[in-house]
Length: 307
Image: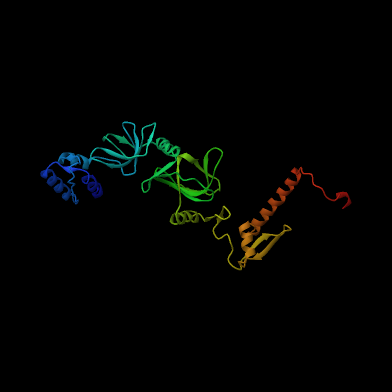
């Protein structure tokens, strides 16, 4: 069964065999709450009532669906023409055809995950991407600290903040939310090989939705510092916090929302609890001692025996 738009598009590209065929098709469509407008172009192919009914009842893929025909052709389905299946883009196993093509109707199936990934890699090799809204587009490059939607040939898979492509060719995100999976935010979240996906910068609405996913687990992403923070990490105005001064002493103060308070917060020298700041100070002291043991430099200064 076809929707009204599919029927309209089909009838605009064919002409009826005779007046009886046109009348029978109109009556059939009226019963299905669809109006018919026929083409009179003498150059268009002729249909009879039986061929129209066969077309109307034929099972076809959804627009934008990736399918594999029994002939072996892989393609992104566009519509069912009178002549057969019309694909927006197709792949015969050797060459990608970026132009629309119509092939005879035959059996088809949905690709397995590995087959879909293989098809996506063909797109990556050709430097292109595809979506049902934009069609074929140039494949987007990835930039550090940018929010991206993650997809595979039009199928949404997730979203996140990109970090890098590591030495193994894996795509790494600071934080990411894959479809039907919990949000992850270790600052080094690997999702797979770069050529297995398509990436598109998020719009403001997408970013808001992603922020809500983090908020649901009491977190937010600080893009300025490239770090994950608990919600409400910063104290309210005139509330207390701790920091470490230049002599490595713990200082308790109040956040008056002055520039110096913001500077400490942005540099990470800002702690809501005494336990947190003591933990960091102990790590600093331990690491500095280890650093001095490893030091192999050749410094010059006063003779320590004469000090």
